[in-house]
Length: 69
Image (cartoon, rainbow, N blue to C red; front, top):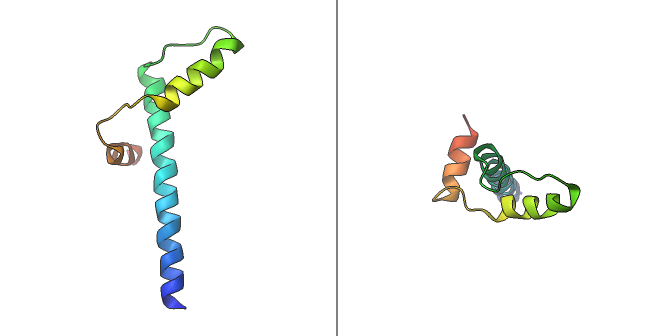
């Protein structure tokens, strides 16, 4: 029972870390302006996919590090 709770907590922490990394990656991409800005709703989906696909830092752990500040 105790090990099951520990495993569940570790999995939840991993899930939170992955989510924070995705959010910080998108935030940094928008803040720096790596994909420019969209002018119409038709360009919005292209802009969103560009910001999601852009690699902004050398390692994903940097996103987690910078998200804490």
